[in-house]
Image (cartoon, rainbow over all chains, first blue to last red; front, side):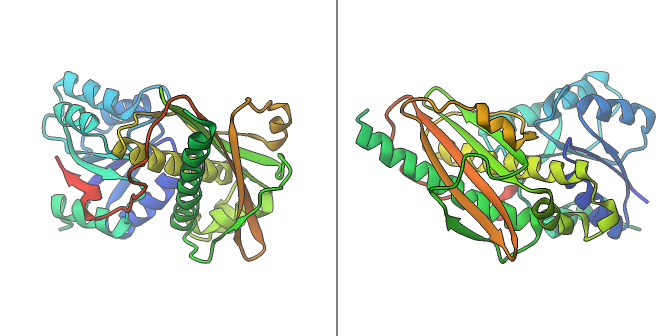
Length: 123
Length: 184
């Protein structure tokens, strides 16, 4: 089953998204901020998709994406950014550091799952 | 900026925060029966717990507070945790209100940006509501209070607004749409 990592400092959001992804057939691991996310990615290099919050304590979502990009180890890893922020500048920065999809909170879970399924079909 | 103009802008901003508070609480709590009750004369401290977030920029500063008791907190948070009573710890309940503040602040940032007003939001925080007793209102600051009510549960909301410059709010519309999932 495809492996998805959710990175968000909100346990409420992680809980709901994890439940929806698992129901759709994905295996999920969680991280609480960008530093934790990068560390768990290094420990689980088979992750197929990252869904990350932007504003988090310690290391934020964009800084983590830069770290992933700079490592050069995950050139094909898709990253979804999950945030209340929709500024064009931030999206441009996100694109430069490998963000493929920008999702604005609050979001409809069914629609997010549909996008995930398109990218990572369940066999 | 005249004090009259300041009051008009503050009132429009407060309405925007009120509207964001009810829509985001409905979304997060998965409850559609939440209503706003205007409550201008509530005491400054109306709950054991307080979640708060700051949105600020060169033109304004806005602090949103949500005060609540533990029983109401559990009521609003339980469906976000799929109604699993045993999984609804105090930590998770308080996290629910941090995320609630985060969503409300994010919507303010978006609408303000549509009006050319650049702001940033803090990370949300939760404290004991009694900390509010030490708050000293800033002269010229506008405070608006309301309650969000569903059955017997309620949240007491406050917003403090300080305006530093003159500006006009051309739009206060912000409705999430299909474009909120965007492939870059």
